[in-house]
Length: 182
Figure 1: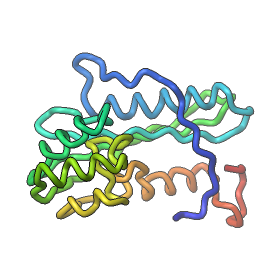
Figure 2: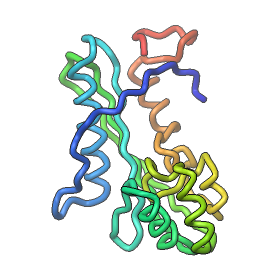
Figure 3: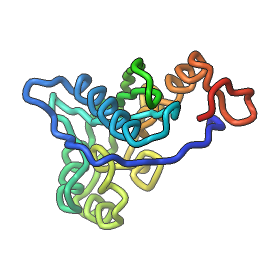
Figure 4: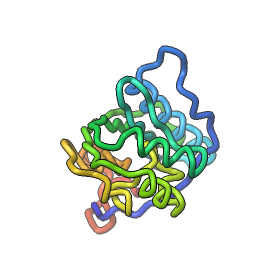
């Protein structure tokens, strides 16, 4: 949407929340670990953005469901309630020491959801790789009544913050006179 071209790479890292780790610290740590894992195998000078998103309700962190049954259960536990979606991000450049980390949050109010609706949605497979078991940008968006904050944060890439970060670092979309290729 912002005009950047990129490649998606999903590193294989342990995404377990540490005991006592806040949801905010958790998503920022995961974003940084993902970015570092990709940067370790990238060419020097490659810009790497790592992201991680968590859904939080009453201090419980909802990550990605393990299967369709867990997805339906997650969706039902969020149904009719307002929860917080927290997305952490980390920008680093392969071969360079500095990095920039950040976080954004949005509040999401869900519509009531029936058992049947939750099971049918889970059976589509869409929620299986989504924190909280729903995709705002997909069919799961129909379960969302309201979003307070940036929709892109709920989707998992806080575009408003990341574009500002990239621009400050001189990283522009193709055709925008980049000082560094993305």
